[in-house]
Image (cartoon, rainbow, N blue to C red; front, side, top):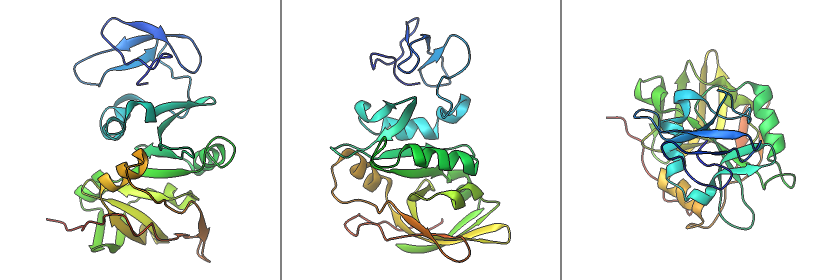
Length: 235
């Protein structure tokens, strides 16, 4: 975890308490994994927490681009990865590892309005799939994509899905399972556009509902057209 019960970051040799369970935590300040707090027993009291190296790179890089007060915010028995600024915060769920459909449903139900938040967005790490050629993107601002050996769990999502391919984000508007591939349509925008939405620097929103077509695909409304769109072109 990034912060202790007093919202302080880990420093070498420090001890503190967990913001969720109140048990003792110790600072982990090595040279490889980024500094963080850990329970004395190697177990996180939040069952939704990413573990090990998963949170040391892509996940942590996203969190470090938003103000400290918007990261790892305690909501009930869980720490939300990122919350948006403003009076009606949404949860941004960063997902590097695989999730079962039951886990996706559990999180979407927990963060639904008006229970614990005003909705949520999923951001899935698809950088490796894009870089090694398993995820191909065709077009410019409204694009088609084909994902071989994909992350099938996104078919279970009922909230907006964004695929982070490194050079841009894909807001998935429609997706179908075609044999063993995911094929779909997405709208492309920069990571900065998402960060501006999170921090409140840009107005507007993404629609928070998705519906199913006859094949079980997820279809969402277009994102707000004030987003600064970018292009996706493979070198």
